[in-house]
Image 1: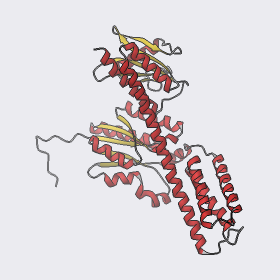
Image 2: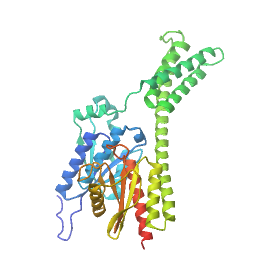
Image 3: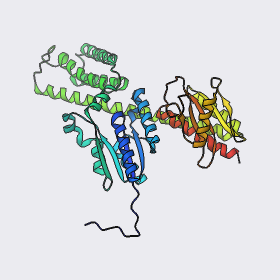
Image 4: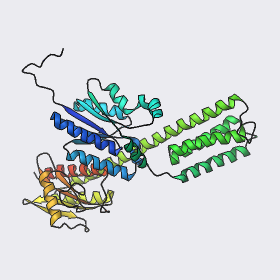
Length: 408
């Protein structure tokens, strides 16, 4: 029987964590579930998205939808964060320990029964349940229509990669056939593995798996007795085929993951490089005008946007540095003023006004608001990606710290 709380004991403050993914419909259900539970329990709640190394290969449509979901969570009062990591379950558990999470809300995508039998024990949901210990875990299931919708959002199929892979296998087969008299069968297998590696590096996982299967078939037809037929005369050759195919798949997966990790690391390095360049310019800045000029030059250098930098002077916002293509009308000045007062992003899809086509970011510290950074995307309906939004907020924070220094 549970012991009642003593009169001097206070109940533990609830802190919810909602884990979303690129499955947009399921993630929206998770956000609304977290919002309802947070209101019922009067609890704080966070929404996180774990970006795996392959995130850079997602379509722009999916990235825009992820950005919209994070904005939705923020509008509901959640703290949002994007975290890079290769193991989703591990990153979720690290976050719960760091932020004293009491309840995790996670989704369970709808898969085929074959997938559930083979891979369910290794899923993210099972991993979280396995290591959650005393943390409550709420699992939200996915409806069938969501699975169909998500399937339609996959990256477009490119048939050319498979044509290229076929050409590579054909070239390897031709060279190997011409050198049959001087090459052992084991050496020929190495040539086909080289074709699989080439496909994995140049075109990705599925073309590489296709190359592995085609290599097994071609090797059987050209080099295994009886030649020029798919019939296999001995069981040893069957083992060779199976091993060649399995090794080809493993190599494809490893190379694809290594390439994704390298690309993700390169993007992270670019992020740090842009911040370093701006920080150097801001360190040398002696006035607010220098800070505004540094912001303008660095953003135009690294992004194809037009920029306007507004700072407070004599109690009013003034344009200190700006691209020629930006001129603020009365409604846009009202948006900038609201951004300054509230200290939150305004514009594009989150403005209380009609969409003005501009994004407004506050230049502020915890205690003081200094100005507003105005961004004009090239396309009227363009949404800033999560990575771009993160860089811009880092720029604004560095500018705020520099302004605080020069204003003393």
